[in-house]
Length: 180
Image 1: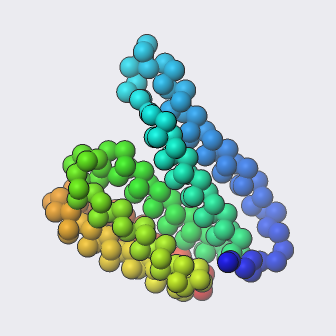
Image 2 (image 1 turned 30 degrees about the vertical axis):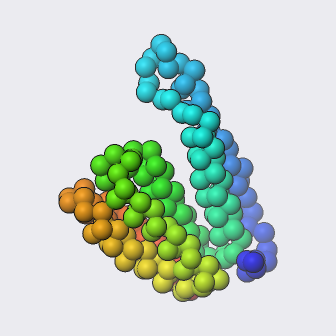
């Protein structure tokens, strides 16, 4: 269980909480609204109930993780590292599920990329979400990202993905290191 290190409430960030959860609702409402106009506008939005369930789960878990990060450490660097790492992980999983990172979403090579956020989560949990340990978990994600890119065998596409997300994990590690 996380222990709040910043005992005083952070009123400067209190407005972010309802804004963040409102964004979650908005991100779920946009495709629902777009589907209402699909017949006339041909937007290409055809979500199923399971699509909405997965999206709600991903956004809810991400929001909860960010809430815990804000409560766990009052450092701006820690919070920025958490926002960057968690946001990048959400984007990686979301894009991979929607269209696939290498080839189409059905390409089995894409499963390698799904393991990268799990490496970070496991490492951060083992470090009890302390800044220095979480920085090491982010570095482990860089290694996992490189391994996923190599195993996926997607050529330049996999290289670009590895560089893009690897840079996010490195920047997040740097921020966590600064927080510690």
